[in-house]
Length: 337
Ligand code: PEP
Ligand code: MN
Image (tube, rainbow, N blue to C red):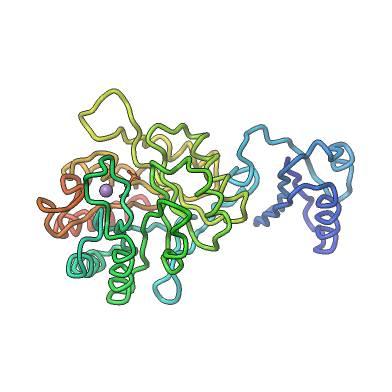
């Protein structure tokens, strides 16, 4: 349920209203916009007399939200959410017109590899460094990532370049290792790992939530809701392609989801053209298409030696290819604003 307040309602009136609503056992989220204040109610709102609420002097209107996702709902929070990643002079904003390019290898392989790639993608204009340390591989016989050592190498790369780091968590049992990771990724395979989502709801850190392999938009938003219900509202959604019948590309990149999510949610949305297509030659055009469709950013796999990458070499750009693409993205942005 949401209540839109009349203009000029004082702070103390708002606080009294919040107290009264909380007294009915619901959670209250206030969203102060430029033109209106929206009070969002989550929980068992049947305990609140909607007519009584509507009748209050300070209340303009009351609406029930039929969608099952509440905190993630655009109606709860009409303005775009801007997520801050990292700190100090290397802080990056994503959402609300702030775009960010995340680049780096699928997996961290060695210090030389990750620091070298970090330096080159930074020089090309990337503002965050990606790199998998805990890798969700389809086969147990494939490279599983350097795990804690990989996280340490990411920290070294951050120290060398200043780029905030983005890396995937696979289990809530590993949360302690991720304490100084700037943006924690939940991969497609874990989008509905509800225990992990609940654990990340209690963490004061931004989360990059990838779309599940065959998740509907509503399932994806409900996963965001799991994190937000725990109190963590710093979520960036990432479209990375979904399964379909055609295996020509690794997945099918659903770009229509960008305007769809803009309507449904206030959370920023970025696109991963690497896992979506599976082929490096398709990455530039899909990156530009995603930005043209209004994405808040991209996450792109870049490897210094794709032919010998331990994971996802076929979809990885070389640093030179990334540099060329980054320039094209800037050109496009100067046109679309
Ligand atoms: C990744 O980003 O390395 C990854 C495994 O992606 P996804 O979860 O989208 O498959
Ligand atoms: Mn990968």
